[in-house]
Length: 358
Image (cartoon, rainbow, N blue to C red; front, side, top):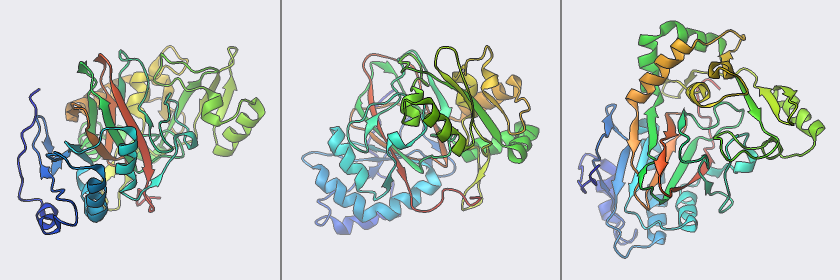
């Protein structure tokens, strides 16, 4: 894929307004870019901002973000994802400063119920899913299978791989509209019944799995009674396995959510659970069910997965790229890759509810 050229799009109002603030913002004046495969819904997806960094420093970028924070976050509620290319972000600490400039509340990884193995770099920055390069991470809304999920995700490309390793992005509202047309009965069942997830939490970290975080780490305890008490409080069902792992079944979670502007989104973990979890079962579809326990057919989930793949944008990482994603509006995933790849991540929570139906 060819590198994008720097193309200024004069229709972006707040970029024009920034020209009057050059001295204050250390002349941080990004340009909108067009990149291969970029979609329109009708706004660009993702929105891409480029900067001829030159001698510019992260402090100037922080000032710019703080000045434009409200405009950027408002735009994100419409477009869903932003890519910042060519900005002077070269380390985990500079990435941390970039994140802090948005003024969002940090969601520490240790405070989540994610099953992915990650390593912290700072209190808010950690490695993205450390599953092996040969293991794809299928499309999902971050932590939608748990009671605690972020409103925003940040990603930083510390090192791009030799080939592959693209991050997949899919507009969840666009997917919802397609599914409502193609599989309306499934969508109605999702609305009326919700969904439940079944997963195995191993006793020890399983580095070969995208869901390999141990139950001790996930539940922040190495004592079975304490683990059971936490699961009971959250409404989970559980069953201890002979190998010391624990099979858990979540309470009923919504599969369709409504945003403040009344758009419906396919907010769940169904695709990833169907395609990428084994849950200790011989058939992957057993990892998911409707809220009443009834089956979600593999045939339907194949249609759902294929539609999502068709609607996805492949983000080809370049070293130094930073992406900001609205978790309520965009699903994401990861392709397999060859070579060394290092993408860091951070989770954040806005002060108001993600959804109008909460």
